[in-house]
Image 1 (tube, rainbow, N blue to C red):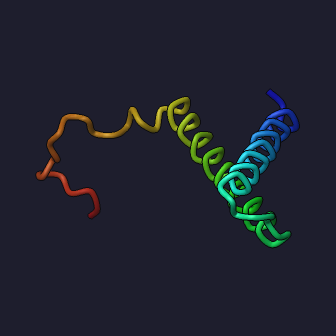
Image 2: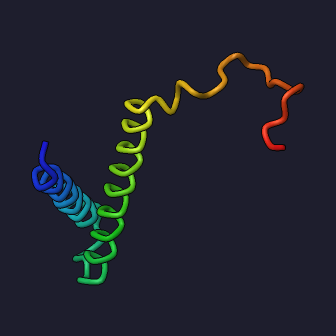
Length: 85
């Protein structure tokens, strides 16, 4: 998947979220949302989507490059050999 396509999907999800939250806000009687509310909402949603995207990319990279395989999974530490000299 290309970076442009992935970015387009992320922006689409953010726009749909903003529209849904705006509709819900007016449905509960919150009145019309001012432009500052839309800006804050947009930045919050885009920041959350970006953070989730970056963390998932790091998780997939960690798995594909074998970073997780190097971790000690025996459940006990080797106390005879210190980690640092």
